[in-house]
Length: 264
Image (cartoon, rainbow, N blue to C red; front, side, top):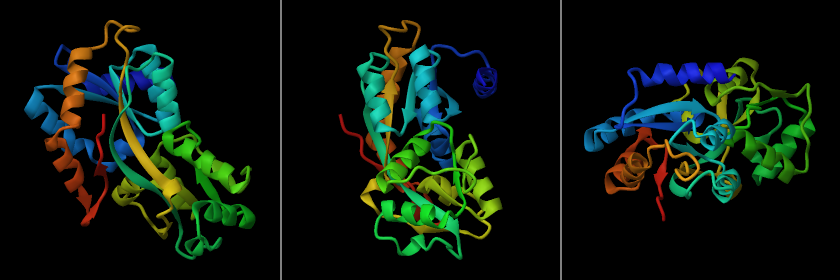
């Protein structure tokens, strides 16, 4: 697994990385949204800074940060992020933007989650019907949220109706589309997903589905080789009015994907 990750980093990095390069571990959901294609050119233009992305799940991003293999991370699992800062791996946690999680499923909706009153109710209906549900199963922020939602619903999902694929958001959505299964997705990845087949957005809007993304610099006291000065410049840009405009205006088919909410 680590060999594949390093190969991906090398592929993304291209030429040897210099002082004007930051290694940023980001979630697959952020990358799948397409927002990076909007933000990175602006960062390069304004800062002269090349941001090389290592696209992994939140859990792996945190492990890369703890090992000092990246300079900063952009992830979406608040409790894990707080632990990352508390154990000294990161200097602080800075919210950048948010969207929400949504429940996707077959248009005929055999578990009838579209009429659910809460996210917990929707998950309970899937479990009661034992309708096929695809889980990322990869320790990502989305997977962590899914596990919390199952717990809130009072269920412990099991095979054969609960299928853990150990894959990123795009691959998991492809699997769900192919099988006609339910799946939890971040809204941005779903809107940017091209292979929707007979799948549709069936449930959203519960406060429990809030999805915050945060920026965490790796602690230079623990890993002196990280590019702390460049990371500070990057964080300042990501929390600027320029970034706010780009994030809030990014949409697919007229539907915004993220809302800027950078707070100290």
